[in-house]
Amino acid sequence: MEVSGTANSNFKMPKKKAQVIALATAIGLAVVSLLAYFLWFYPAIPGRNAVLGWMPGNANTVLFIDLGELRRAPFFSDLLAWAPKPDTDQEYRQFVRDTGFDYERDLDRLAVAFEQQGAQKIFFGVGDGHFDKKKIKAYAAKNGALQNSGGAEIFSLPIAGSSAHLSFTFLKKGRIAFTNKDDSVSWLHGAKAVDDAEWRERFARVAGSPVFAVMRNEALKDAFGAEAASQDLARRATGNLSSPQLSSLLAELQWLTVAGKPANDKLRVALDAESLEDKNARQLADLLNGVVLLARAGLSNARGQQQLGAATRQAYLALLKSVEVSRIDRPDSKSVRLMVDVTPELLKSAPSYSPAGARLK
Image (tube, rainbow, N blue to C red):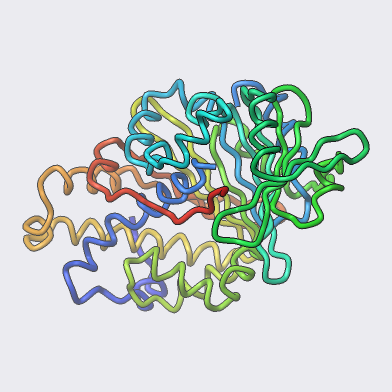
């Protein structure tokens, strides 16, 4: 594995040993954190395509999780044990009692699209599962408002800590649609997604993965601004190391896809970073290989071994050994693919990720 002179000259070796060790965790933990965040919110292809078919074509990010398939994987119990648990919250337990719905048990698959409309972050979601319609309607009627539109019942519930509301309706038995958009009637009442070939192509690439996220370049720009986004991601991906080249390369990405698939007792994660320029893809691949080499060196030196326990060090070394960086040339884009294995041992060594999520009142 070689690192080009261009990539290596722009990548600064960390001065502190803590930063060296951070390199070893960056690749795996960033991916697992992303998956854990979206877990809170195929076996059958028709069901998968049905929920994805509701996603708006002008979305910036689309997320999909097939919990029905993940529950059958040995790795799922380890991921669930590591991730934050909403059922420890008194309000969530009361919600389960009132509605009869517990996502761990009752949610089968979920697709959510995100947009940025001015200052507001908008989401649209469709979920399949086992819903006690009578109990859920009673809960919504008691705690929110009901609107009838064209024969459809649209419920609205306030979101804690926000002036926004969550609106939802039953599309059919076992399928529910929801959004925080102020004008939700048109979409919830039956508006279909734009038939966008770019989205469908990327959904097809990850058809075998029960969990994935597909993001446009606009998703980064909307969240941080183009320059700030690339710099923020660069710091996270390299343990706060300075890498102007990585910032530039991230800003040039057109699409980023993250997909996970259980493989026995581990989660095989693939990241596909798409660029329009072959030069950008080549430099990004070189730079990622450089990160892996530096991380291995940091774990192998005496200071790195002293700072980490034996089990933690072995978990990080296993993560780095599993990393594969390759390039894919497509007719309209040049991609860099990074493959990595997330193991139960790595989860046990990593701190739990606890995002501050919105809750219903």
